[in-house]
Length: 349
Image (cartoon, rainbow, N blue to C red; front, side, top):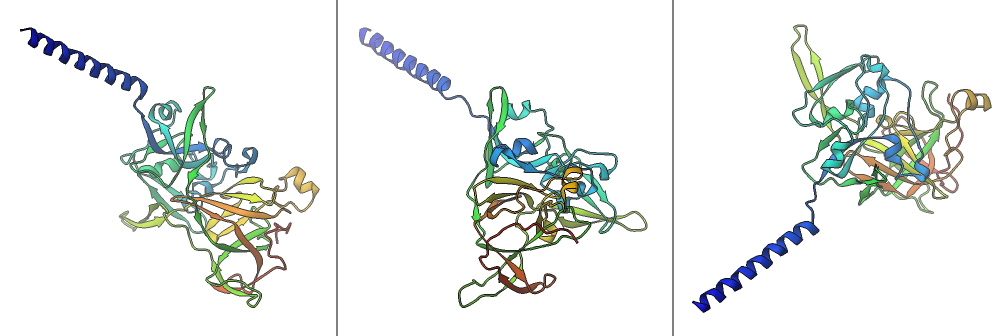
Protein backbone atom coordinates (compact mmCIF):
# COMPACT_ATOMS: atom_id res chain seq x y z
CA UNK A 1 0.00 0.00 0.00
CA UNK A 2 2.82 2.38 0.87
CA UNK A 3 4.65 1.64 -2.39
CA UNK A 4 1.42 2.22 -4.32
CA UNK A 5 0.89 5.64 -2.72
CA UNK A 6 4.47 6.65 -3.43
CA UNK A 7 4.06 5.64 -7.04
CA UNK A 8 0.81 7.63 -7.30
CA UNK A 9 2.42 10.69 -5.74
CA UNK A 10 5.41 10.53 -8.10
CA UNK A 11 3.12 10.25 -11.13
CA UNK A 12 1.05 13.22 -9.97
CA UNK A 13 4.15 15.38 -9.59
CA UNK A 14 5.34 14.48 -13.12
CA UNK A 15 1.92 15.34 -14.59
CA UNK A 16 1.82 18.61 -12.70
CA UNK A 17 5.26 19.61 -13.96
CA UNK A 18 4.31 18.68 -17.52
CA UNK A 19 1.16 20.80 -17.38
CA UNK A 20 3.12 23.68 -15.90
CA UNK A 21 5.65 23.42 -18.72
CA UNK A 22 2.91 23.47 -21.35
CA UNK A 23 1.32 26.53 -19.82
CA UNK A 24 4.66 28.36 -19.72
CA UNK A 25 5.42 27.45 -23.34
CA UNK A 26 2.02 28.72 -24.38
CA UNK A 27 2.56 32.04 -22.64
CA UNK A 28 6.08 32.49 -23.99
CA UNK A 29 5.28 31.60 -27.62
CA UNK A 30 2.00 33.18 -28.70
CA UNK A 31 0.42 31.83 -31.86
CA UNK A 32 1.70 33.72 -34.93
CA UNK A 33 -1.32 34.75 -37.00
CA UNK A 34 0.80 36.28 -39.77
CA UNK A 35 -0.38 35.84 -43.35
CA UNK A 36 0.92 36.79 -46.76
CA UNK A 37 -1.51 39.03 -48.59
CA UNK A 38 -1.68 41.33 -51.58
CA UNK A 39 -2.48 44.73 -50.10
CA UNK A 40 -3.42 48.05 -51.72
CA UNK A 41 -0.85 50.43 -50.22
CA UNK A 42 -1.12 54.21 -50.80
CA UNK A 43 1.85 55.62 -52.73
CA UNK A 44 3.22 57.61 -49.78
CA UNK A 45 3.12 54.57 -47.48
CA UNK A 46 4.67 52.30 -50.12
CA UNK A 47 7.62 54.53 -50.99
CA UNK A 48 8.35 55.71 -47.43
CA UNK A 49 10.68 52.73 -46.92
CA UNK A 50 11.83 52.32 -50.52
CA UNK A 51 13.30 55.69 -51.51
CA UNK A 52 15.32 58.56 -50.09
CA UNK A 53 12.96 60.66 -47.95
CA UNK A 54 10.08 58.57 -49.33
CA UNK A 55 10.06 60.59 -52.55
CA UNK A 56 8.02 59.45 -55.56
CA UNK A 57 6.43 60.85 -58.68
CA UNK A 58 2.84 59.68 -59.24
CA UNK A 59 0.23 60.59 -61.84
CA UNK A 60 -2.57 62.28 -59.89
CA UNK A 61 -4.83 63.50 -62.71
CA UNK A 62 -8.05 61.69 -63.59
CA UNK A 63 -7.72 59.62 -66.77
CA UNK A 64 -9.18 56.42 -68.15
CA UNK A 65 -5.60 55.16 -68.63
CA UNK A 66 -5.61 54.49 -64.88
CA UNK A 67 -8.50 52.05 -65.46
CA UNK A 68 -6.68 50.33 -68.34
CA UNK A 69 -5.10 47.15 -66.97
CA UNK A 70 -2.81 46.96 -69.99
CA UNK A 71 -1.11 50.13 -68.72
CA UNK A 72 -1.80 50.41 -65.02
CA UNK A 73 -2.42 47.02 -63.45
CA UNK A 74 -0.35 46.77 -60.28
CA UNK A 75 -1.65 50.17 -59.20
CA UNK A 76 -5.21 50.57 -57.94
CA UNK A 77 -8.09 53.04 -58.08
CA UNK A 78 -11.61 53.24 -56.72
CA UNK A 79 -14.64 52.65 -58.90
CA UNK A 80 -16.04 55.73 -60.64
CA UNK A 81 -19.13 56.33 -62.74
CA UNK A 82 -16.92 57.38 -65.64
CA UNK A 83 -13.66 55.45 -66.04
CA UNK A 84 -12.05 58.62 -67.41
CA UNK A 85 -12.33 60.02 -63.88
CA UNK A 86 -10.19 57.26 -62.30
CA UNK A 87 -7.19 58.36 -60.23
CA UNK A 88 -4.35 55.97 -59.28
CA UNK A 89 -3.97 55.86 -55.50
CA UNK A 90 -1.13 53.44 -54.81
CA UNK A 91 0.50 50.08 -55.48
CA UNK A 92 -0.74 46.55 -54.82
CA UNK A 93 2.09 44.71 -53.09
CA UNK A 94 2.64 41.40 -51.27
CA UNK A 95 2.83 41.94 -47.50
CA UNK A 96 3.58 39.76 -44.48
CA UNK A 97 1.23 40.96 -41.76
CA UNK A 98 -0.74 39.65 -38.79
CA UNK A 99 -4.34 38.92 -39.71
CA UNK A 100 -5.64 41.12 -36.91
CA UNK A 101 -3.48 44.05 -38.02
CA UNK A 102 -4.56 43.56 -41.63
CA UNK A 103 -8.24 43.63 -40.71
CA UNK A 104 -7.72 46.74 -38.58
CA UNK A 105 -6.69 48.75 -41.66
CA UNK A 106 -10.30 48.86 -42.85
CA UNK A 107 -9.81 47.54 -46.37
CA UNK A 108 -12.15 45.20 -48.21
CA UNK A 109 -11.23 41.51 -48.30
CA UNK A 110 -11.08 40.20 -51.86
CA UNK A 111 -11.46 36.47 -52.49
CA UNK A 112 -11.62 34.17 -55.49
CA UNK A 113 -15.40 34.34 -55.12
CA UNK A 114 -15.54 38.15 -55.37
CA UNK A 115 -17.79 39.11 -58.30
CA UNK A 116 -16.14 39.85 -61.63
CA UNK A 117 -16.39 43.33 -63.13
CA UNK A 118 -15.90 44.80 -66.61
CA UNK A 119 -14.01 47.95 -67.54
CA UNK A 120 -14.53 49.40 -71.02
CA UNK A 121 -11.81 51.65 -72.38
CA UNK A 122 -12.78 53.96 -75.24
CA UNK A 123 -10.67 55.63 -77.91
CA UNK A 124 -7.80 54.03 -79.77
CA UNK A 125 -7.56 50.33 -78.96
CA UNK A 126 -11.01 50.36 -77.35
CA UNK A 127 -11.86 47.17 -75.49
CA UNK A 128 -13.73 45.67 -72.56
CA UNK A 129 -11.67 43.75 -70.02
CA UNK A 130 -13.18 41.50 -67.37
CA UNK A 131 -11.40 41.24 -64.01
CA UNK A 132 -12.07 38.48 -61.49
CA UNK A 133 -10.87 37.08 -58.18
CA UNK A 134 -7.84 38.90 -56.78
CA UNK A 135 -7.91 41.21 -59.82
CA UNK A 136 -10.71 43.05 -57.98
CA UNK A 137 -7.91 44.80 -56.08
CA UNK A 138 -7.34 46.87 -59.24
CA UNK A 139 -10.60 48.70 -58.48
CA UNK A 140 -10.73 48.72 -54.67
CA UNK A 141 -10.04 51.16 -51.85
CA UNK A 142 -6.88 51.64 -49.76
CA UNK A 143 -5.71 48.59 -47.78
CA UNK A 144 -8.06 46.17 -49.53
CA UNK A 145 -6.42 42.76 -49.53
CA UNK A 146 -6.33 39.23 -50.90
CA UNK A 147 -4.90 36.41 -48.76
CA UNK A 148 -2.21 34.45 -50.62
CA UNK A 149 -1.95 30.67 -50.32
CA UNK A 150 1.80 30.59 -51.00
CA UNK A 151 4.82 32.59 -49.87
CA UNK A 152 5.53 35.26 -52.54
CA UNK A 153 8.99 35.81 -54.01
CA UNK A 154 9.10 39.25 -52.39
CA UNK A 155 7.09 41.13 -49.79
CA UNK A 156 7.00 43.99 -47.32
CA UNK A 157 6.83 43.32 -43.58
CA UNK A 158 4.07 45.23 -41.80
CA UNK A 159 4.29 46.22 -38.14
CA UNK A 160 2.72 48.69 -35.74
CA UNK A 161 4.84 51.59 -34.55
CA UNK A 162 3.51 54.37 -32.32
CA UNK A 163 -0.02 53.24 -33.01
CA UNK A 164 0.40 53.33 -36.81
CA UNK A 165 0.86 50.50 -39.30
CA UNK A 166 4.21 50.76 -41.09
CA UNK A 167 5.23 48.89 -44.25
CA UNK A 168 8.94 48.05 -44.30
CA UNK A 169 11.37 47.88 -47.21
CA UNK A 170 10.78 45.07 -49.68
CA UNK A 171 12.36 41.75 -48.71
CA UNK A 172 13.57 40.01 -51.86
CA UNK A 173 16.36 38.18 -53.65
CA UNK A 174 16.47 40.42 -56.75
CA UNK A 175 17.18 38.91 -60.15
CA UNK A 176 20.13 40.47 -61.99
CA UNK A 177 19.08 41.76 -65.41
CA UNK A 178 22.61 41.96 -66.77
CA UNK A 179 23.38 44.95 -69.01
CA UNK A 180 20.67 47.35 -70.17
CA UNK A 181 21.20 49.63 -73.15
CA UNK A 182 19.26 52.90 -73.21
CA UNK A 183 18.59 55.70 -75.66
CA UNK A 184 17.24 59.16 -74.86
CA UNK A 185 15.15 61.18 -77.30
CA UNK A 186 12.46 63.84 -77.43
CA UNK A 187 8.98 62.55 -76.57
CA UNK A 188 5.98 63.04 -78.81
CA UNK A 189 4.00 66.23 -78.25
CA UNK A 190 1.07 64.35 -76.67
CA UNK A 191 3.27 62.44 -74.23
CA UNK A 192 3.27 63.37 -70.56
CA UNK A 193 7.04 63.29 -70.47
CA UNK A 194 10.15 64.25 -72.36
CA UNK A 195 12.92 63.16 -72.50
CA UNK A 196 11.84 59.64 -73.43
CA UNK A 197 14.10 56.72 -72.51
CA UNK A 198 13.91 53.39 -74.38
CA UNK A 199 15.33 50.10 -73.09
CA UNK A 200 17.18 47.43 -75.06
CA UNK A 201 18.91 44.10 -74.43
CA UNK A 202 21.57 42.27 -76.42
CA UNK A 203 23.24 38.87 -76.67
CA UNK A 204 26.48 40.63 -77.56
CA UNK A 205 28.97 42.57 -75.45
CA UNK A 206 30.66 45.89 -76.21
CA UNK A 207 34.46 45.90 -76.20
CA UNK A 208 37.37 47.95 -77.52
CA UNK A 209 37.20 45.88 -80.70
CA UNK A 210 33.38 45.76 -80.89
CA UNK A 211 32.10 49.32 -80.65
CA UNK A 212 28.56 48.61 -81.89
CA UNK A 213 26.22 45.72 -81.14
CA UNK A 214 22.80 44.41 -82.25
CA UNK A 215 20.04 45.11 -79.73
CA UNK A 216 16.29 44.51 -79.39
CA UNK A 217 13.64 46.13 -77.22
CA UNK A 218 13.54 44.60 -73.74
CA UNK A 219 10.95 41.83 -73.47
CA UNK A 220 7.97 41.88 -71.13
CA UNK A 221 8.47 40.73 -67.55
CA UNK A 222 7.18 37.26 -66.71
CA UNK A 223 4.31 36.51 -64.35
CA UNK A 224 1.72 38.99 -65.64
CA UNK A 225 -1.84 38.52 -64.47
CA UNK A 226 -4.25 37.33 -67.18
CA UNK A 227 -7.76 38.81 -67.39
CA UNK A 228 -10.33 38.35 -70.17
CA UNK A 229 -11.16 40.53 -73.17
CA UNK A 230 -14.93 40.53 -73.73
CA UNK A 231 -16.36 40.73 -77.23
CA UNK A 232 -20.04 40.40 -78.18
CA UNK A 233 -21.64 39.41 -81.44
CA UNK A 234 -24.77 41.00 -82.89
CA UNK A 235 -26.93 38.75 -80.71
CA UNK A 236 -25.14 39.73 -77.54
CA UNK A 237 -23.31 36.43 -77.15
CA UNK A 238 -19.98 36.86 -75.37
CA UNK A 239 -16.59 35.55 -76.40
CA UNK A 240 -13.81 35.65 -73.82
CA UNK A 241 -10.12 35.67 -74.78
CA UNK A 242 -7.05 35.88 -72.55
CA UNK A 243 -5.67 39.37 -71.95
CA UNK A 244 -2.27 39.83 -70.28
CA UNK A 245 -2.19 42.80 -67.91
CA UNK A 246 0.81 45.03 -67.24
CA UNK A 247 3.39 43.28 -65.05
CA UNK A 248 5.47 46.29 -63.94
CA UNK A 249 4.32 47.95 -60.71
CA UNK A 250 7.08 50.50 -60.13
CA UNK A 251 10.70 51.40 -60.91
CA UNK A 252 13.12 52.67 -58.30
CA UNK A 253 16.00 54.68 -59.78
CA UNK A 254 19.26 55.37 -57.94
CA UNK A 255 21.54 58.23 -58.99
CA UNK A 256 25.33 58.49 -58.77
CA UNK A 257 25.05 60.08 -55.30
CA UNK A 258 23.00 57.17 -53.96
CA UNK A 259 19.65 58.98 -53.87
CA UNK A 260 16.63 56.81 -54.67
CA UNK A 261 13.55 57.93 -56.58
CA UNK A 262 10.14 56.24 -56.85
CA UNK A 263 8.82 56.12 -60.42
CA UNK A 264 5.27 55.17 -61.38
CA UNK A 265 3.23 54.21 -64.41
CA UNK A 266 1.80 57.00 -66.59
CA UNK A 267 3.90 59.56 -64.74
CA UNK A 268 7.31 58.03 -65.48
CA UNK A 269 6.84 54.98 -67.67
CA UNK A 270 4.63 53.54 -70.39
CA UNK A 271 5.81 49.94 -70.23
CA UNK A 272 3.72 48.82 -73.17
CA UNK A 273 6.27 50.75 -75.23
CA UNK A 274 9.16 49.79 -72.91
CA UNK A 275 9.75 53.49 -72.28
CA UNK A 276 10.53 55.62 -69.24
CA UNK A 277 10.60 59.39 -69.07
CA UNK A 278 10.64 62.52 -66.95
CA UNK A 279 8.98 65.89 -66.95
CA UNK A 280 11.42 68.49 -68.27
CA UNK A 281 9.61 71.81 -68.81
CA UNK A 282 10.99 73.97 -71.59
CA UNK A 283 11.19 77.17 -69.59
CA UNK A 284 10.68 78.80 -66.21
CA UNK A 285 7.05 79.65 -66.98
CA UNK A 286 6.22 76.01 -67.73
CA UNK A 287 7.99 74.89 -64.57
CA UNK A 288 6.12 77.44 -62.45
CA UNK A 289 2.63 77.16 -63.93
CA UNK A 290 2.36 73.60 -65.23
CA UNK A 291 4.76 71.16 -63.64
CA UNK A 292 8.21 71.19 -62.04
CA UNK A 293 11.22 69.57 -63.65
CA UNK A 294 11.87 66.07 -62.32
CA UNK A 295 14.88 65.87 -60.01
CA UNK A 296 16.54 63.19 -62.13
CA UNK A 297 16.83 65.40 -65.21
CA UNK A 298 20.52 66.27 -65.53
CA UNK A 299 21.64 63.51 -63.15
CA UNK A 300 23.30 60.15 -63.77
CA UNK A 301 21.28 57.00 -63.09
CA UNK A 302 23.49 54.15 -61.89
CA UNK A 303 20.92 51.56 -60.86
CA UNK A 304 17.34 50.61 -61.69
CA UNK A 305 15.15 48.30 -59.62
CA UNK A 306 12.01 46.92 -61.29
CA UNK A 307 9.22 45.69 -58.99
CA UNK A 308 6.94 43.44 -61.04
CA UNK A 309 3.95 41.21 -60.50
CA UNK A 310 6.11 38.14 -59.86
CA UNK A 311 9.65 39.26 -58.95
CA UNK A 312 12.08 42.09 -58.25
CA UNK A 313 14.78 42.74 -60.88
CA UNK A 314 17.87 44.91 -60.55
CA UNK A 315 20.23 46.41 -63.10
CA UNK A 316 23.50 48.12 -62.11
CA UNK A 317 25.09 48.15 -65.56
CA UNK A 318 23.36 50.63 -67.84
CA UNK A 319 24.92 51.96 -71.06
CA UNK A 320 23.57 54.99 -72.90
CA UNK A 321 23.90 55.38 -76.65
CA UNK A 322 22.01 55.70 -79.93
CA UNK A 323 20.30 53.21 -82.26
CA UNK A 324 20.28 53.16 -86.04
CA UNK A 325 16.50 52.60 -86.31
CA UNK A 326 14.26 52.96 -83.26
CA UNK A 327 11.29 51.37 -85.09
CA UNK A 328 13.01 48.11 -86.03
CA UNK A 329 12.65 44.91 -84.02
CA UNK A 330 16.45 44.66 -84.04
CA UNK A 331 18.85 47.52 -84.63
CA UNK A 332 22.43 48.61 -84.13
CA UNK A 333 23.38 50.28 -80.85
CA UNK A 334 26.40 52.56 -80.49
CA UNK A 335 27.36 53.85 -77.02
CA UNK A 336 28.12 57.48 -76.20
CA UNK A 337 31.71 58.45 -75.38
CA UNK A 338 31.58 57.23 -71.78
CA UNK A 339 28.24 55.39 -71.88
CA UNK A 340 27.07 57.03 -68.64
CA UNK A 341 23.27 57.11 -68.20
CA UNK A 342 22.90 60.89 -67.84
CA UNK A 343 19.28 62.06 -68.19
CA UNK A 344 19.47 64.87 -70.76
CA UNK A 345 16.97 67.74 -70.78
CA UNK A 346 15.40 67.13 -74.18
CA UNK A 347 12.11 68.82 -75.01
CA UNK A 348 9.07 67.18 -76.59
CA UNK A 349 8.60 67.40 -80.34
